[in-house]
Amino acid sequence: MSTEVLNELLRRSESLTNEEKMRLANHLASQAGKSQAGQTVGTEDNGDASKPDPKRRRERQWLLQHGKEYEGQWVALDGDCLLSHGTDGRLVLAEARRSAVIVPFVVRVEKPDELPFGGW
Image (tube, rainbow, N blue to C red):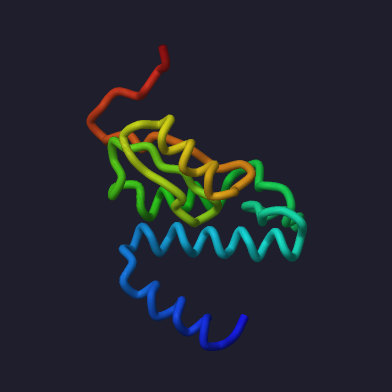
């Protein structure tokens, strides 16, 4: 790609919302991971970039830092990158899957004063 095209993309990205910038950043990171490892980079802390960290350390840390901003919503994460959020868990998951992340972490951020979700 020419430097001119790259500079144009960078200039145009300045007009995006923060959420759109996060989606673009995740997409670019995903594409870079595919070209380097043949698949998206996971949330590893276990030394293997192809497998998600089973303890989801980066996701849990993100929730501690940003969870209050998304109380009452579903969030989809890949490591410390927010893929999607909203009140409809199915839509959040669908959007996260469109971002090419192999195994997104999807959770509902509960409000401190509400009872925990127990399922149907």
